[in-house]
Image 1 (cartoon, rainbow, N blue to C red):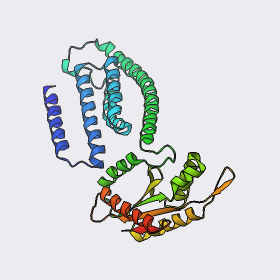
Image 2: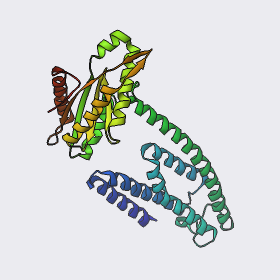
Image 3: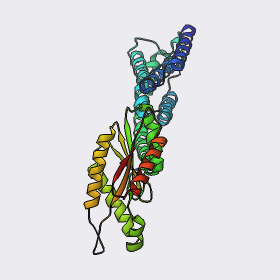
Image 4: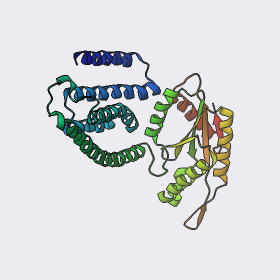
Length: 315
């Protein structure tokens, strides 16, 4: 028993050292928790079996530990990490019931239960723990799914503009934080601004202005690619993100958008309203941060406004 404990301690130290030295990436963040959790749960179950502490309370406590872990790790990691624990629990229980191995081996020939009751007690613990575990897992999984879905919905709303359901400024910042870890080779940013938008608001009202913004968003979505992203930066200003796209191709897509906006007619309260947009385009150079690229796109947009509007300027 002492030798087994020493072995577990040594293996734990080795795993701890490996976790410290391994580089942080998607594979290590997925597999190392599974390996560590699998070893931890299985070692606890083995020690509990040899010490004669595999009771219903122990089983419920083990299940509770799994639930706690599901709040820290993804459910997939916790389920995989729990497999060694479940294998040890069921295998040792079945072997004890079949009288192949003794229960509480560390205290043999003395046990907490008599020899003829040993198999019954272990079997009773196995069945009841399984029933309680299935009930608790079902309830907690349902709760966790609802809680996770609500959290994801709230998180999405933080990053979305309520009028257009596209990214807002916070969503753009979050996007580029994630993109920084993937190191895209090439990306372009395009800023666009609705021409004379204040005049539309003043002449037709803010509700009409909102309809113009909504229709503009729909036009952009129809003309960009699936992998491109739209963000409303505020008011009538929008950002389009072209990831892994050369500037010539981005320009062609923007020209398609510009032409579709120019030819679109919005019918509002029996009035026909036309509007245009100006575009500023810039491409990232040598791992340039997005704020610098955005600044260049803003300068290009200013140039498009200065040179007559309803056009595309790029730098």
